View (spheres, rainbow, N blue to C red):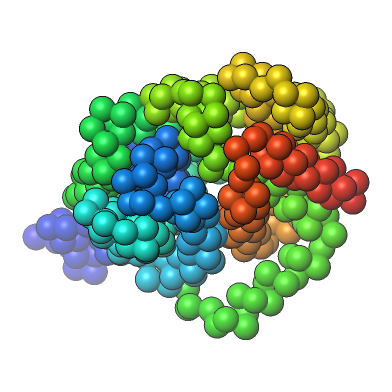
Amino acid sequence: MAARGAEPPRDRRGPDPIVLKNAPVRAPLPLLVAVTMTGTVALHIFVPVLPAAAADLGTSPVAAQLTITLYLVGLACGQLVYGPLSDRYGRRPVLIAGLSLYLAGLLLAIPARSIGVLVAARVLQSLGACGSLVLGRAMVRDVSTAADATRKLAILTMAMTLTPALAPAIGGVVGGAFGWRAVFVLLAAVVAALGLLVVATLPETNRRPVALPGLSAVGAAYLRLLGAPVYRAYVVAGACAGTSLYAFLAVAPFLLGERLGRSPQEVGLDCLLVVAGMVAGAWIAGRLAGRVPTRRAARQGNALCFAGALALLAIDRSGSLSVSTLILPLVLYAVGIGILGPNAVAGLMNVDPHAAGAASSLYGFLQMAFGALFTLSVAAWHDGSATPVAVTLLSAASAAALALRRA
């Protein structure tokens, strides 16, 4: 019998609710990495089979390239929405909704019989996929302590760099063997499996939901960031670095396939080689971190971009374009943006640490908006040569150089 006045024994049938509420959330990092990677897979995996889809649907290259441009527009706009929604309603339900929308767009694309239906399906895919892009990063931050946040985000960044390198090669092999529609069948199976894993194994990581901010409050936060000259400088440089290479990827099937006689499989491997330059550049950026100031490293990377674009323009105008003389300047350009990009992002995220989330969302929006502008410019100017790509890349490097002068 307990002594008089002694504290009664605790009920051991279950955990204390306060302890349960504050318990650390564990989410599998490989799943979070996979979720984030799917955000841009559909953009890159379709590139090698674009000419086949255009021929099958009886449409022009310019109309077919809208499937790339409008996908970027959807990715840009959606990133401004998913963050605030997940802050209010939780990451998990919003992510599941995004993956469902993504899957619906993929299933709509498989039987498409007109370019209009395919473009609509691509827009639907992008509006769902950008949820994976935003929420994967957010959930990694949610479950990371101060000690291991840098390590986990570094793994995520490397995976995101590998995505545009691997996806075109996969798309070229699958499309060449089974047709362009098989690319969407494969991706639908992957997204469906990923969605099931999220439902079955991924817990809610946002343990402190906040009130959904009004449009005026969100807009004011974005305007404050744009009012900072340093933020404007780095965001322009980063956006130019992050998506200017899409100008090449959008016309690569036509430039490499129709002019230089490359097969869809070879186009995928060529794109893999170019984007692998970004991985090399990102590795160099990591080695420079802490040794070279952010602004100087960004300018050094942009100098490589400028040199690669200028070399490509000179080669094309001299009439000596070949597979090797096309790919080598583009690899140099890709190495440059691999160095410039991470340093630009580091610079803009340090402008206002209390608004890091808004800074990231606005950067993501502007990055994809710039990418849509770059792809639209080469699509409108497409003449079978490499000049539109070279001029677009040269313009992007020049804009980044001017911006970095103000950083």
